[in-house]
Length: 299
Image (cartoon, rainbow, N blue to C red; front, side):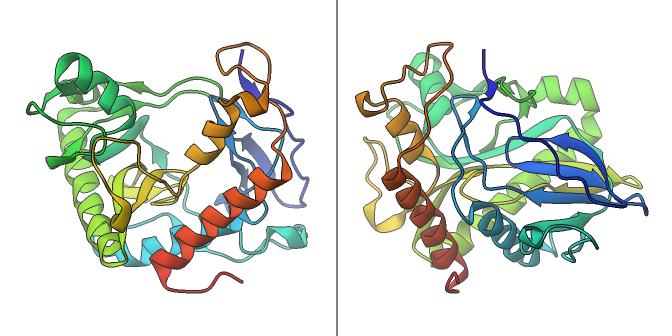
């Protein structure tokens, strides 16, 4: 059993129809047929949406995504039409709302990996592959790969794991031409973002994107290159052979898996609320990632 510890009730706004409550974002449709995405301060770990929110998290994810969309605009179009808050919506939606084109979303998590860690490391240690892609001997946790690789996954419902699959399976499901375009675009975007982050003292170890089609054109959607969708490491602390300090929510996972939480991630019991010091430290990591990447102070 997993999913929401406490699933929130959607906010009712005149002129908006609520479509979906996700792990972080709430999705609506306006009277023009456009999508309205609102990033909450919810956070998830171990396939649970936790009962505790991280203040400002949704605004940071939204503003960082907008910054990246601008940096990537010549590589791939994005779904954003406006950041205007719909009339009648709560004041709290400011800074966390995107009005977007409605896309025919592709059922693929497009993952790019430039470094070996996470589930890729687990597979490599057993088979010397990641998603079936053969890699050389001698790599360890945190090793830079000889070249970035595209390792897609099939999207799962809230509470379930995304399923890593070989590229050939994606091509079978969505067609070879679209799969090729996804792979090429994912790796091009990752390469651009990796270089930008590196110039700011951050290693982009891996990241995931979501794409959809609009009139046959490939468009990037959802969030991009945030601490929720990417592994960011401080470049000056990078040391292969050990777990790296990260700007993502690994900090929360580590606490939940520790004796301090009193919770077993393998149990069917819902996770506990996060203590105040974990909330504060987690928020500080999101703020630091935003400030180091954009060069702007978070206010």
